[in-house]
Image 1 (spheres, one colour):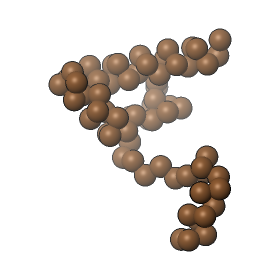
Image 2: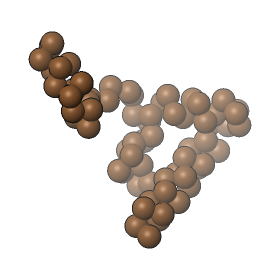
Image 3: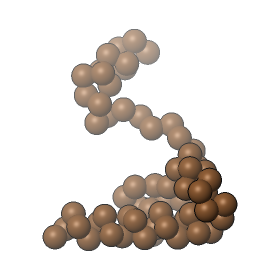
Image 4: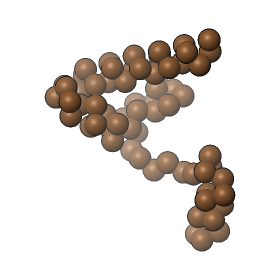
Length: 68
């Protein structure tokens, strides 16, 4: 375990993400939607559906700007 932690400290791109995933298909294929992000987004709107829609929209916009 210590070797893995040392490796991840030197190479953060290989850090394992252990957050529970709420969505991983479609708009969330490259960057899954975690329950933590979903809860954060829903805290302001008080609507889970709106939070998912906004997260998908943000990822689509982000993907378009990265390819431009």
